[in-house]
Image 1 (cartoon, helix red, strand yellow):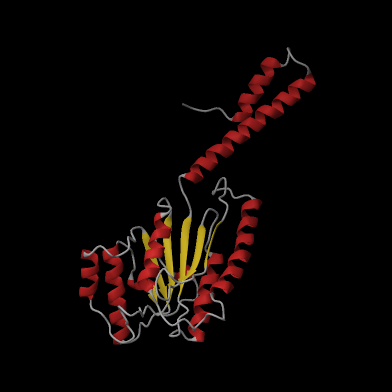
Image 2 (cartoon, rainbow, N blue to C red):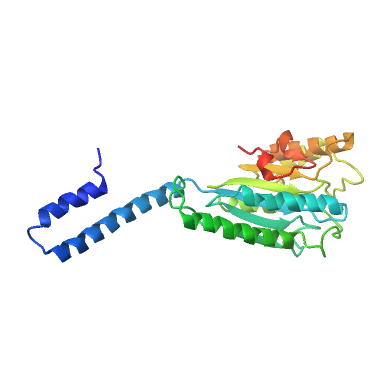
Length: 269
């Protein structure tokens, strides 16, 4: 069915009512009907946005003693670069890689940018929301990489960290989830210490069979800070690529990096 423009519909109604009501009442009624038409359009735009929720950017930062100051600074700069890629309706969660498990006291921050009523026609208020969020995110990233904590934690529990990331993603299955791990990807706990002994992929298959891997379905991962130049580093990379594959996640080789200037060069399509 072809819809007539709201303005034409209002004009037709006014023409029929003009002989009946006074001019002042006619003007007031016209304004009211136009406002109703505008509300309907906004409602349709909001409904459209509701069908397209934004991306959830989940950031896990490794502040363990194996991380050098330059690596931590590069990771911090990369995460701050999210201010250039987030959009209205996106959400961001920041937390630190766990040291020894869920019993750790951990920093966590999450916030959502207000969604645009019509993403195809952003309003000045939508741009202001992005600017305000960029300022807030920049401040919280500084807290995330707190100098009093950076490079001083004595363990790296990536397995627990990935379980937490999976829980964060599962909390809103409508969204696209991008997990950014700022780490050398060396699990260092009493059970598995990659700094001393690298497990092979048999460990992952056994963990999958025992159903202790996190459910990372729908999660695309980006790693910044890993060793990609040595045989040992490639062994670690192969371990994590299979880990994510069996956990249902997406960790492609092009997203497993030692360094990247900003999130704009990463692919999670």
